Image 1 (cartoon, rainbow, N blue to C red):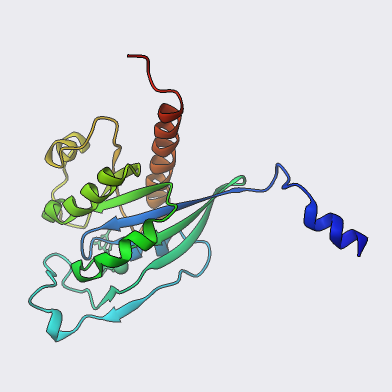
Image 2 (cartoon, rainbow, N blue to C red; image 1 turned 60 degrees about the vertical axis):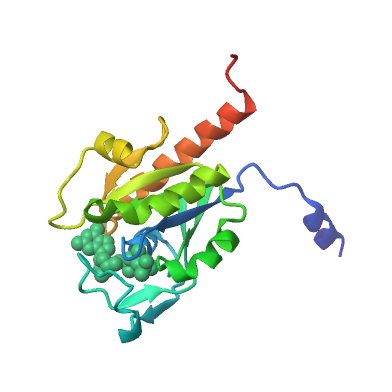
Length: 203
Ligand SMILES: Nc1nc2c(ncn2[C@@H]2O[C@H](COP(=O)(O)OP(=O)(O)OP(=O)(O)O)[C@@H](O)[C@H]2O)c(=O)[nH]1
Ligand SMILES: [Mg+2]
């Protein structure tokens, strides 16, 4: 009993990793579920449902004609970025009719990835607005689908009218190293934003 008591009250050791929550957001079919699945070290939780005939007029499949399912609640995965840093990843649904879930998913998020496809960049405007309005630090990750015209990051910054300092990275959501670099960019950016908020620059 004494041991159990002492155990329960022990202080967290320095070796215990910090756990951070990140959202993976963006337009419909841009590769959110793919990215979470690529980097997750646990079997990712998915909530995929088949795309239906009824959704055909509203679900724009241009560029992702092979897509058969869509996320209806969330994706969930985990990655140990460093031995002292674990990320919990929450992928959002992409269809507009599931927007009401975003506020739940965004609770307590340290930062976000906004995935973008340059063939339909406008699909990520809503996600960019969402995080800007809530002051949640985010990075834009351009998922370079095969055959998509490559744009330099500064072109994307301009097209999305991003604040200076918002990272824009080119990635392939199907490649682990590439997807990991995206997450590192978000964590570093969120840390810089947090440091800036703690010590605002003298005016
Ligand atoms: N060529 C290519 N295809 C990709 C890439 N990422 C995802 N895909 C494909 O694009 C389709 C959409 O991927 P998902 O990961 O389901 O996209 P999503 O953003 O989660 O979609 P929703 O949840 O429906 O909004 C799938 O058929 C993927 O196989 C990529 O980097 N390159
Ligand atoms: Mg999805």
